[in-house]
Image (cartoon, rainbow, N blue to C red; front, side):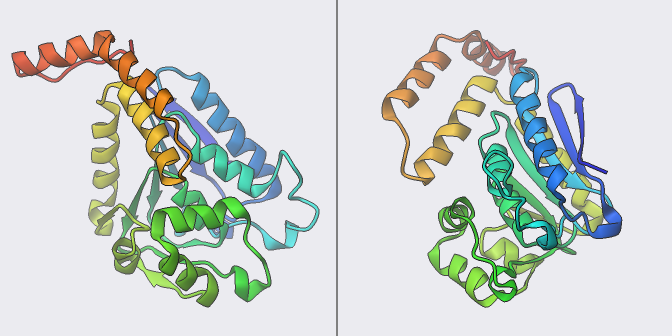
Length: 249
């Protein structure tokens, strides 16, 4: 089955649904995932997207037997991952099990990666004879650093969960029994933030990491937050010692 999208209040959940195949992605999944991202971008209420999966594994990457002839412009794996990185909402990968191949880049495209101590990862592209695409190489270097990117791409080394956290692949790590609570706590924290700075700073931080940010665009978003009703609400809530209720305006 293709990935499922569920939206409830400020939270969207995308679930990979091929547990019998370790949630391997097929050609038809790429367009579906990109369409889900486009739907989220049109949904003003959605502030957080959680990418998760059914079964033992998070995702075993793209079906390499389908790679020849399937990676055409407009429907390639890299374009789908770029759509995740560029999603307006904040994205969280809930990595409860193994994440392999292209799925590691899909996870890196998310803003946060919550892992269970049962998780592991490896990038076998060189072992399989595949040269990885530019966007994925850039993500690995910008998020993990050049030395770690070389270690993972060129040796195909398998990392266990604590090593994934140590090298920066995971932003959060929890024992299996506390994993869902850790995901819920993070998503609740993010969903409670004011949307204008939440979305704006996410976008600009990603652009800064790639060295292609626009200072004038940042200044416009700063000014937009300064004149917003949400900033007034944040000040009132601070003075009244209560949680703010932000509306994105």
